[in-house]
Amino acid sequence: MIRFVDVSLAYPNGTVALRNIDLAIEKGEFVFLVGPSGMGKSSLLKLVYREERPSRGQVLVAGRDVSRLSRKQVPALRRSVGVIFQDFRLLPQRTVSENVGFALDVIGCPKREKHRRVPRALDLVGLSHKADAYPDELSGGEQQRVSIARALVNNPPILLADEPTGNLDPETSWTIMQLLAKINVKGTTVVVATHDRDVVDRMSRRVVTLDQGSIKDDRERGAYDA
Image 1: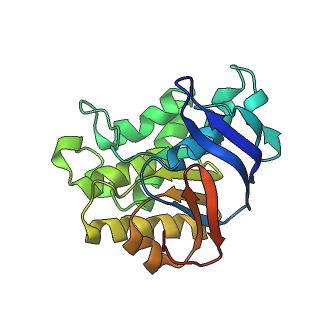
Image 2: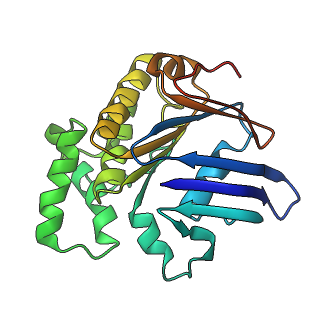
C-alpha cells in the first residue's frame, strides 16, 4: 500500500529531514510513527500525500511513485489519502456538517451523494447529534472527531494522522485512538505520527521509531521506548 525505497529529504535551507528510509506499510495495517519532535515523522507523512517530494528515492502509494505525478494527478492522490492534523483546521463559520461536506465540495461531489456521505461519516465518529453545531460549540475531542469525519467522508483507503491527540487530554486522546482503531478494523490503512507514549503502549500496534531522520527501530506490536 505504502512503500519508501531509499528515501531522503532535504529542505532548501539545508535541513535533512529524512535519511535513507526503507519502509513498507501493507494494506490494512495500523502503524505508529514515533520519536521526539523534529525527527522526521511529519515529513514522512507529507511525502505520502505529496506535500513534499523526496530529494532521493521513491515513495510508492498503491504501486505509483507519487513524486512523479503531474500537478493534475495530485488531487486524485489526495482523494485516496485522508489526513488528520493536530490543530483540527475546521472552518469556524461553517457547521459540523458543512465542515465535513467541504471536503466533497472541493472535488465537485454531486449534492445527492454529499447528502448521503456526510451523515454516514458523522455517524461513524458519533457526532450525528452535533451536525448543526459550530466548531466553537464543541470540545477539543469533538472537533478532532469532526476532522476525522472530514478525512473519511471520501472513503479513502489510507488515513494519515499527524499528532492527532497533541491538543487533547489523556482520556480524550484514548477515545480518539479507539476511534482510529475502529476505522482500521473496517479495512482502512492507518498511519499515526505521535509522541504520546501512553497511547502507543496501550494500543499494541506496529511501532516505527524515527531518530534524526532515520529508522531506529521497527517492531511489530511494540512499545514506545524511544
